[in-house]
Image (cartoon, rainbow, N blue to C red):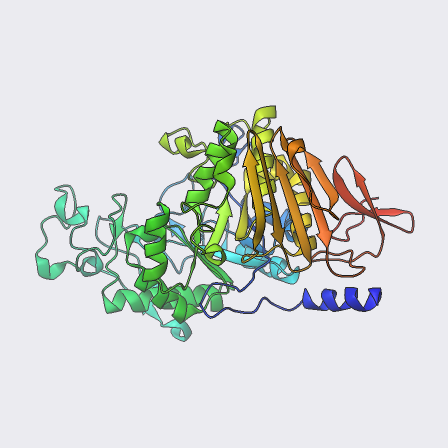
Length: 488
């Protein structure tokens, strides 16, 4: 019976997640995501910008084994030729030519090789999509031609007629198209304006065909699996739905950087054909672990979970924008810019213990992962062991002074997460086994499938042991982690 169940689950883990009724929203998704970059992490010099390691395509290729061990989804930075940086394309958030995939992150061929390597190991790749605005060619309002081949729509040449009519390109006296007549402009913007580049008019049918061709080309030609949409407050959500329905990504994640009410409105505009980064929860985590307000971790209306929208949430602690960049963005940061301090570790590990126990699709930030890889990997393994997923139910939760506890149901068992320096005051449910213990966090599991010692990749029918709060399996005198990878 043991072998039969383990074999069955091994086979199930090889089957792709079934698509939900909405495009880009996998049903009961057990995937864990990695943001495989941070601001300016393409740079080669030492110092603040690169102290967590360079993440050019060639660098990520060297880390594919470790990445694929922990993550089913990897989010890459914008890969098109773009403004900025000290080389060809910079960080990539002002793209100039979308069909040109040569950037400061590396060459097109190296990118395709990296995507192929990740796919071979079963990990999907998410492309960063910047279509709210674009950079120019040689003046404010002229653009490079894009060639997506005949298969995906052919060549596209956007002009100033495809720029939103209120864009500063038409109102700034320094612009080459300053004062252009209404007939030479696009329609009004359907969202907020971005002053750093030309905002595209998504009500224009030609712009729509361009965007559909680009996204279909990214999946069909570049072999991306899904999309992270940048600055979706810049255009109406109906266009994001339109583009997802055309390209049919496995997963779609929207950067709607706002409060829960605006995020709900955005989901409605998209007809629920995307997931959304859970910014409200990010700020609740900051209040809970920095200010000591552990009650913020409970279900409340200022959260996707409180609104019954867990399946649409991609949860995170920090990203490339909120992390310290030596400017005002750092005010949004979860904690200290020095991740190695005892206080930073205490807060971060509590946050990740929470994320890995909760519904939604958790996204791990590269600097956090490389700094605390062993502990974060162990938390990911626990999530996978009991099958916590995007729609998991929080069965019960409690909080008090510097303590929080919750029991969460997964596909293959339950997890009880206990947080805070007073977590010993929490009552651990009967039948739960401690599997991790760290700085102000302890996790317990109760498996509900007979004889299963497994997570997503690799199975070892061994004896469970816990060393320094981390679960391992012993088999024939050798020690394995819970992914089935031999340690010694």
